Each structure stands twice: as C-alpha cells, then as structure tokens.
Length: 332
Image 1: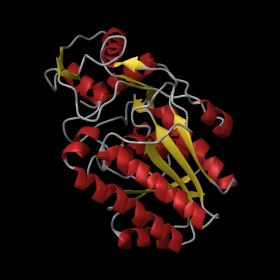
Image 2: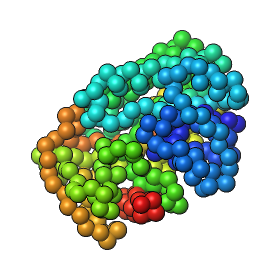
Image 3: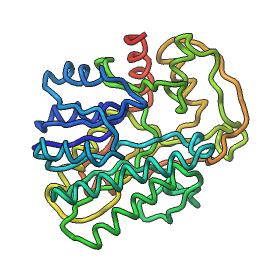
Image 4: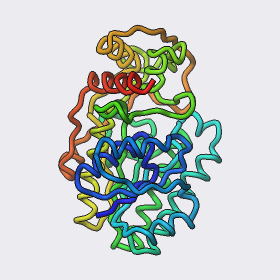
C-alpha cells in the first residue's frame, strides 16, 4: 500500500515516513524543502533500508500533485505540509492563510479527482484556543488565538464539510501537542533551516554553542513557575500515532479528531533543567517578554486516542531531551 506524505522531509513527516516503511507501507514524499533538506530522504532510506519516491514541489501546485497521482497508485495521504510558527503567523497572517489553506484545498481537489478519499491531517492543539479547564478533551469548544491555529481549524472544518458532502471520505484529524526529541539513530530530528521558533531546537543550538542564550518568553503565566506549560511528546510516539490513524481510516469511513499527547504538562524551565541534567551540559537562559498568541498551559487528555486508535505515548521527558541532544551532537 502506497502512502503519499506531504511535507515528508520535515520534522514530524520524516519520522512518520520511517514508521510507515518499518510497517510495510510504500512511501511517496512531496516537499518544497522550505524548512527541510533533501538529504533527509537519504537518511530515511538509511534507517529503514528501503527506497522512497521523492518529488520536490509545492502542494499549492496542482500540476505536480496531479503528476504524482498519475505516476503512483496512492491509497491514502498524510498531510503535513504547511507553515507552523505561531509567532510568525501573528506577524505575517496572509502568508499563513495563503499557503496553509491553498495547499490543503488543492491537495483535496486532486485526491477527489483520483478517487483517493483517505487522509490523515496534521492539526494542532492550538485549535482549542485558551481552554477553560485541563486536561483538554476532543469535544472541548474550538477557538484560536493566532493565525496558525486558525488555519488548522479552518482546514478541520473544510474536512468535516467534505465528509458531509461525500461519506466515502475517511478522515483522521490528529491534534498534536508539542513534539520534541529525535530518532534514536541520530540521523533525523528537528533541524529548521533558520533560527528556530520552537523551544527544543533553540535549546540544543544554545547548548552546542550555535546560539548564545535561550529566550524564555514570559515568567508571569498562571503556572507553577510562571513559565508556559505544554504537553511535550516524543516525535517517534507521534509518528507511531500516524500509523494507527492510517490503519483506522483504511478500515472505516468517517471523520474524527484525536489528541496526540502524553497527558502531562511540563514548564519551559522544567524542560531546560531536565535537558541540562540528563545531558550534563550548562547554558544560559533569560526571561523576555511574552509572545503574542501564547497561552498559560496546554496538555491533553489522550484517552480517546487510546480507545479508538489503540495508541498511547511511551517515551518520557528525559528520553526526549537525550534524543534531541544526541541528534545535534551527531549532526554538528
């Protein structure tokens, strides 16, 4: 069975490709390499000892998507492609609306043209906005605090409308919490092309001397130490969740959303201190102003994913910190 993975050389996409190949699926990747590198394909093949079909291109381009579906017998799609930085989306909302919506609608149109109606969508916990209580369940009210999250919620609504119009579609919406960590091999991990927007890749760049200091955005949140609390999940656990989602949509025809998180909340300072401890390194951090669009705390109730997908996270925060550092050490 052949799975098209959009954004497949990115951080979560690359780890999911490894899990797909290890579970006997064939993989076709499309990626425009705007936030990843071409050699990730070689690393995926090295880890799995299996070949990947790769197309360099953009999901907003209907011609290349049509070419992919003509040249490959695609059974289902996992859709990662999209811009993902909360702060940048606040500063440049049109960039996010244009890219994230256009790429998704174009992909869905081509899938429909070829009768491929099974998709796993990479959504986000940002669709819950600022929740009234924790942990977060899938049936909580949906709202957003930034344009990135708004694009994710709009695409979720598009997918639900698509299913209402045609019940042959089978759609799994995966709401990620905060992926960190890297593959145990150290070959793939989070390696953004520019200065990182996310906490863990920023920490490792400071820990390895590539950047001077970790900026902690606010210490006056309503949390145990004043810094933002998030549900950090190992990227390999997250990737395995996509395998379970593919198994689900192959067997059924419905649309449903699932939280992929650990159910535990860790503060920014807890992540920094755990990273220092498990990797025996020291580095500087400083408190700076809050970022627009950020919320106090966010962590999942992952019990629905356990019940419906037979999935749960296995790795702890120390594994996430060790594997993140191992990746950077091996890829200096």
